[in-house]
Amino acid sequence: MPIACDFNIPLHFCSRKDIMELKAMCYPNGGPSKGFAVPVTGKNVPILRQVAIRMKGLDDGRKSLNAQTLLAEDLATDRLQVFPGQDRLFEVGFDFQKVAFDCSNGREPHVLFIDSRRDRSMRLMVSTPEIQSLIGMESQACSFCKEPMAESDILKGDGICAPCVVERT
Image (tube, rainbow, N blue to C red; front, top):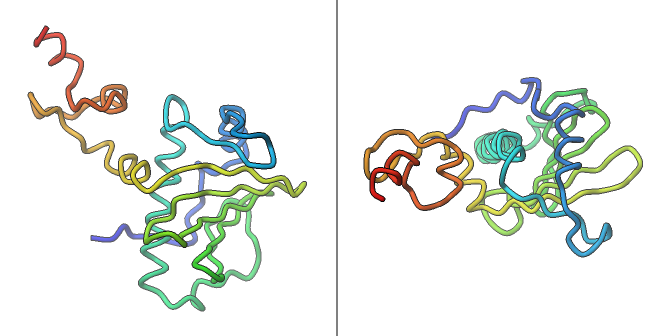
């Protein structure tokens, strides 16, 4: 079932504060001209999860609606907006920023670009598997006790919660 996406919902996770926090947590990957890679760990996870869910909703909305119905009149502060573009590139507008989702290599967006008012850009390397794991993170259960796993346990990647690890050792 596709994720419902209201294109006028304020994007609280896309506040300038959140984006600045994300930028501060970025590490250079080949210098500023080649962008920055963002690890899907720590404080990045909740922000990137929200971005991933919005990206999924955006892609679902793109598939189900005529592109012309998604045209926005202006770039509004803290509001999701979609612009038809070449090569399935879509933009989202919020306070003094632009976010573009590149869907050209598959059905899921996998790269997020953020352009500031000063025409600087930052590239968030968020691959399709990472998006899918972030979207499904809250529903993952331990392979032994079947209880929902904590985020720290999920990020370890072994599918076992901390209490079960202790119990097994």
